[in-house]
Structures are given as structure tokens and as C-alpha cells.
Image (cartoon, rainbow, N blue to C red; front, side, top):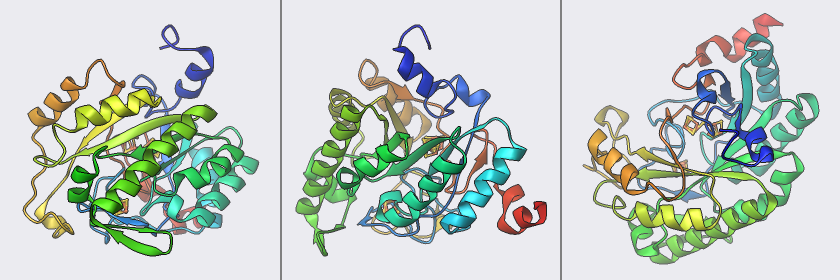
Length: 297
Ligand code: CLF
Ligand code: SF4
């Protein structure tokens, strides 16, 4: 709340539904699905659906061009006055699609300067894009960080696409880890509020997330959101984790509790889809499909 943080930080979080538990009852966010490509492979990802780093897997979002996205944001903003934040969270990685992501952000920065801009990324491309992020006043960034030990990372990420080639194994996880830490440090230095998402994968990174929490706090992360792996048979075989279960509610709470005293935890995440619209936990995306927006004009 306003009593326990500097005024300029409070100003950034007071109406952001993800960064403030209180705000999520009153303020809405929306996502536009402009970023289809990804530059890494997570073992828990099913590429047919939205990026599961931020989203509930098993939903397919309507992909938009930057122009369609801007049109949609302006239409939603005029219908839902509590809509304070626009995020780009997939369906792939926002920064693996820099042209589409930043074209959208630039147009919104110009045409709707009151809307707060937010994006989520796996962090691989982040250090190269920090200048661009600051240019459009994107002051909230989420990085998905599932490990700080490349040996653990090798069990989560079979490959990354880096420097024009595919890199695999522990080397891939080491590069991803270094880029995530560097990106986080650069955002902190520039005053961008950074939230860390971690996917809790039982037997792979459950105990390790305590160390992740410590390392991200050290580098200035504002919030740490530990999310359960969602693995449901009807969503098809997850790429490399056949038979992998998600955590129980008790297991999730135990890891979150073990992180108390470290980086502040977010516990109200609803794992939104890449084209979510409305209050967290409420999904009005069906009211704002492209054909409906065209009818509104
Ligand atoms: Fe979207 Fe993410 Fe920005 Fe929020 S969602 S890009 S930080 S505006 Fe929020 Fe949804 Fe959880 Fe994400 S509840 S999945 S944390
Ligand atoms: Fe899938 Fe991982 Fe890429 Fe997200 S970051 S789209 S979960 S591979």
C-alpha cells in the first residue's frame, strides 16, 4: 500500500491489477495476442495454444496485427472504463516478435497515453530490447524464470534459438539464465517494475524455487508469482513432460510459504489467456472479437 513504498512506485502499482492485490478488485487489464513466434522451447509448452509462461494452456487466442490490436484496445477502453493496463503476453514470446510488439506499443503510447503498458517474456531477447521498452514507457515487465541453475534448466528447456542457431542442453539453459539475470538487472537499473513468474513443476524445480526467489529479489524484482504447472490430458501431450503432473494446492502453498520473507509473492494470479479482457478471473474476450469490434464502429 501507499504507506510501505515510495510514492513513484505506488503510482505505478495502484491501478495495476497484477501488481496490486487490492487493485485487482477494481481495475481491469486486457491482452492482445500479437506475438505468435517463440525463441525457446519449454518442456511444458504445447505450441498449439497460448504461451503457458503467463497463460492458462489449452486456449487458442485470436491472433491480431498491431493495427487490429490498437483498434481493439481503443474499443475496449471506451466500453470498460476500469481497463487501465494493456499487456502483450503471447501467444508466443512478446520479445521474439519485436516488430509486432513494439509497433503495437508505439501506437498505443501515442494514441492512448493513459493506458499503462505491460509485457511478459521468457527473457532471452530482453537485454537487447530494454531501450525500446523504456522508449514507449512500458513500466511493467514480467520475466518467466523457472531456474537459476542450468542443470535444473536443462530439464525444463530442451533448446533455445540463439545467435542464429539452435542450442541445446545445459549450454542452452546457461545462456537463458544469464540473459534473464542481465535483463532483470537492466530493468531494475532503469526503474521498470519487474515481476517474475515461475512455473512450479513437481520433482523438477519445486525446492529450487526458493533459490530463484532469493536471486530475483537480490536483483530488484518487485513481485514473484509462483504458478502451478497445469497439465491436463485433454490439452494433449505436453512437448517433453509426458506423464508430468501439476502440483496440488498444498504443494503450491508450501513452496509459496517457504519463499516468505524473500521477494514479495503474488497470490492472486488467474493465469490469463493471451487475449484476456476484463477483471482478473473474469473473461470478456468473447465480447470483443474482431467482427464484434467492427460492428461497434
Ligand atoms: Fe497481463 Fe501479465 Fe501484464 Fe498482468 S496478466 S502481461 S502482468 S497485464 Fe496478471 Fe494474468 Fe497472472 Fe499475468 S493475472 S497471468 S500475472
Ligand atoms: Fe511456449 Fe515457453 Fe515459448 Fe511460452 S516461452 S510459447 S511456454 S516455449
